[in-house]
Length: 193
Image (cartoon, rainbow, N blue to C red; front, side):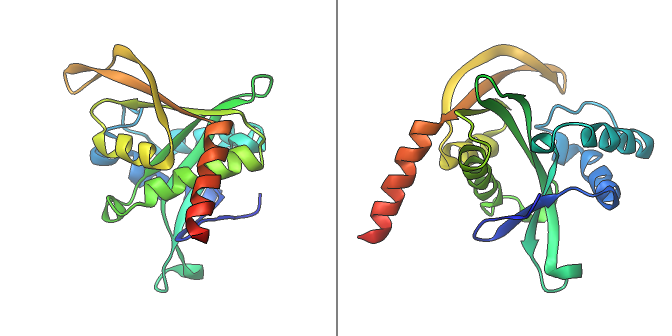
């Protein structure tokens, strides 16, 4: 898959060489606090995950979120991952997930920009009709990023996730293609004023 470019980021295919970095991220409790990971991950497990992921259709492969960085090899620094999964080609919808693994880049708008780029890719390239996600109600930063990207609240699974000795609600959010298209037209018109 060719790179996908945003204003400050690019998305590229995950490579086997990324496993060590992924392992660092998924074993950091702060990074995984709002993810569906509950156990420490061993190198073997991460390698097996990667091999299994590579057997999925290309549209469901993990992409690495990179920012430009002069001090990084090849001029780009990986800061996280994103992925479409649970693709339903008949109904034209897919779930999306994101992880900003480099904490130094939290709260800088990279999550929002990544989600906007994923929406563009999902609607314009994959021809999806609905893109959705699940987010814990404790993930306030994530909810804000998703709202800024255009996701709307759909509903919730009450006390559906157990973490740190307590239950929390899981919110469902989505964007429909007509909503996204209308929003793109509005943004384009604002830019031409």
